[in-house]
Image 1 (cartoon, helix red, strand yellow):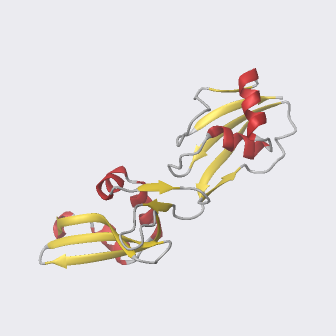
Image 2 (image 1 turned 45 degrees about the vertical axis):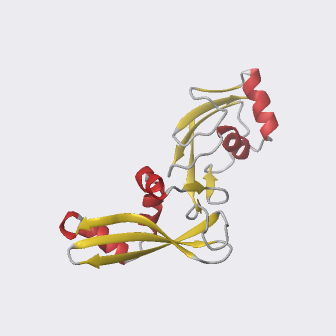
Length: 182
């Protein structure tokens, strides 16, 4: 029987970018937007606050876009300060590259295993699904979900009792499956 695990975000990730006021490296995006119109051109920013001094950084979302070329739903979501839109835009590689930012997901996600009734079985087949592109080490997920230490999970991989079609070392942000034989 295949068990389904889900890696889901609990809040917005920290934005890694240097603060010009205090030289801190971390910002917190709170889902607030600023939209500015100059005649028929729009600029839009996602606002992020420095974790140390509270200074505001503007992450460019739209730059000098014609009003007619912006979807009305997108504009409505920005005016409503939609936190789901903020999460989508933070994960957009174009927005991250344009603003030269990286994301820190430490403490901003959780693993939902659907209960622990499957842990006492001899063979466990698990499908791990990511609700957002959160880079996590698969060994950490497996260790947390099965109640193992990371060293024990590493030992099970080297013994061939923990197998997957994907490489379990390194970071992964896409769906995968694994089998654990006790």
